[in-house]
Length: 141
Image 1: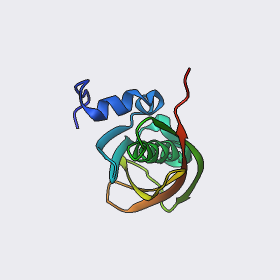
Image 2: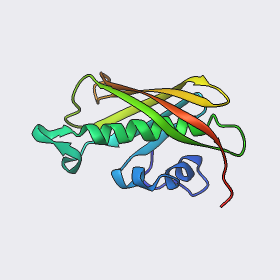
Image 3: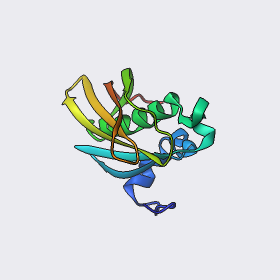
Image 4: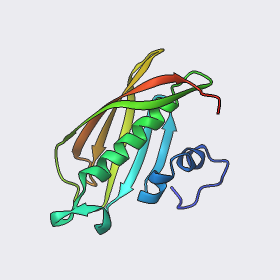
């Protein structure tokens, strides 16, 4: 995916709604209600000891990709908020790019449950996050 997306590209619009994700370097490669894929490049600034991509950076990737998946499954006029998130780390990401793939497990009127898997550059499963998103009526501000 190019570094700069046209403003009318839905992936650019999604990324602009989550400025923290853009700050970290997260990009969306695919975004639809059945599957959202995003990446986070490894960088020394996002690491912990030994050059391992920090768990918080990985969780930011999975939370962002999972939240977009939930958002794309909302009924018209609704908003969402993460109410629970659990991550299992299975292997360290030490270089390259972490790739996250989110799919909805349950889309209901009150909750959306999303499962997001994270892979390293060799395509090995590095972690899995399951999050529950509340389906909320939009508030008038």
